[in-house]
Image (cartoon, rainbow, N blue to C red):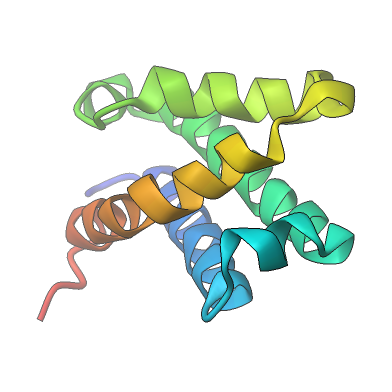
Length: 115
């Protein structure tokens, strides 16, 4: 990675994903649904991931195109921000459970931080 902006966007996305992992560690879906502060914090971190990927598309379209589901991640961010009144918290939890670990692994690999 030659561009510092590329690395910054990837780092921002990874940091946000790590935060989601920390925030939700040991939680169940019911815990998540019953805690408005936790839901708000997780949604904010997903917004950051989507915004970082939007920036990544501008500065490194080739790398951005190699990220699976990048358009869906950006669209998810848009729903969280613009459709805030209709956010489906169970869907958000499903993303936490089903997609977060894979995203973290990918970001770590792209940043070259694998052991």
